[in-house]
Image (cartoon, rainbow, N blue to C red; front, top):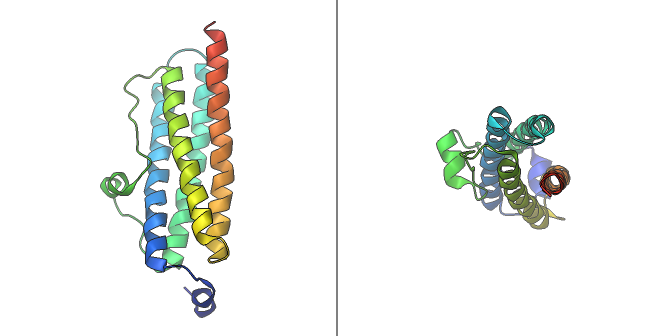
Length: 163
């Protein structure tokens, strides 16, 4: 991190790196959950759900990339293995053992709600103290809120189909 960058960051960098690495692991797990869900999905609205899952997977991978870059800028090292992702993540991966679209969507909705909390907390932690991390967390939060809404909309649509 550059000299001026160090001067304008007024948070505990070690604590921030811990939070960013937790989020980084969660993004990889979310990527995988969406991707595998897209592969195994069965049932109503399968085509639409698969398309949305693939789009979300792409965005989760972009989030992981943004977080890794910030971790490195702050002098840290991103978590290096999937075992570490799982160990440090607060938002957990849920295997698609029941590959039916309503179940998969509900699993991803729960994950998105956890992610919303993660990025709200990161924004709160960095607000006025680390402008770059705040900007990144705010950007990701906006996308996670959209993901949550899309999963809620799918559940509503699936519910209407089943009435």
